[in-house]
Amino acid sequence: MVAMNKQKIIALVIVVGTVLALAYYGVLMLTRLEPVTSISVSSDGRYVISAHEDGALVLWDIDAQKREQLSDNANL
Image 1 (cartoon, rainbow, N blue to C red):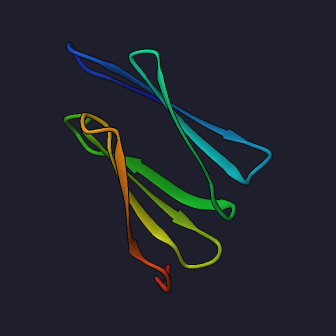
Image 2 (image 1 turned 180 degrees about the vertical axis):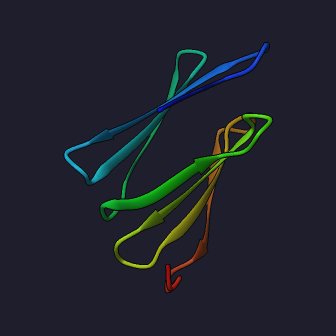
């Protein structure tokens, strides 16, 4: 999945269903999580949210290059 606006390009790469990587301006944010069941990019391209099989709900702040796990038991 690639989200684009006038200022940036964000690429989401899901490899073998267990590794989620965000490539942003040549910087790679990589984390190992349970398989992704749903993913969405904010309209301004600043945030990505991912839901995972184990109930994890993760918010990715692309500009700050940080991730925050919002829940470990989301019922999605």
